[in-house]
Image (cartoon, rainbow, N blue to C red; front, side):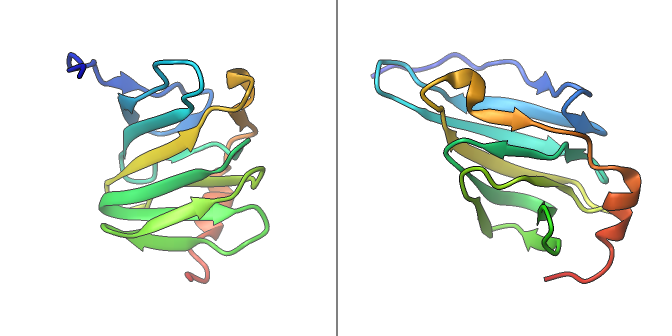
Length: 138
């Protein structure tokens, strides 16, 4: 058994996130054949990812606050602590905190055969797109 030392919290880069977002790594591949990545991600109110997709999909488990998630072309979905969303492989989506609430989730995904292609980052979610999400809530 390995006991990992505590890793420092990382502030996520503004090239991929809008607002203040922090990441605490939990798990990463250790040996050949392993793919699992898990992180705790905390978003300030209004903070969000850029549009992106994952080669092998992504599972998001909300642990605190109010999350907004949206697939490109779909309605925004509001999630609360204890709920889980699955984004299938290749689906362009964004996720973040509601405009008036902090949010924390566990992000779980598998590395692609080429780890550089695990997540494909796209353009930022504009303020207009984010505010438009204030429309219908699923």
